[in-house]
Amino acid sequence: MPEFANKTIESHSELLMLRHIVQWFESETEAWKWYTQRKLCAFGGLAPREVVQKYDNAGIIELQKWIAEREMGGFQ
Image (tube, rainbow, N blue to C red; front, side, top):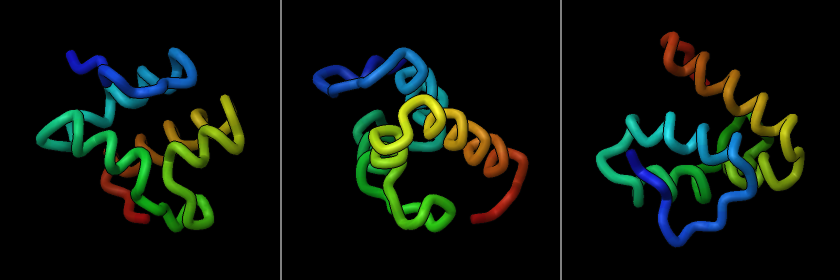
């Protein structure tokens, strides 16, 4: 299981979310790039990491809901 070595992870919840989304990508590096750089319309154009930094645990909860919606076939 990926550990996102050499990355600054803010919390255990953030690490769990990253471990979950890594399955969407071919590598941990691609998952990290998405997490730190992909701007999401649903979050006002913030990247997932920016959501966590701005909203802390509430941001993680909202991202987890967003991820669950994507996995159920919902679109952004």
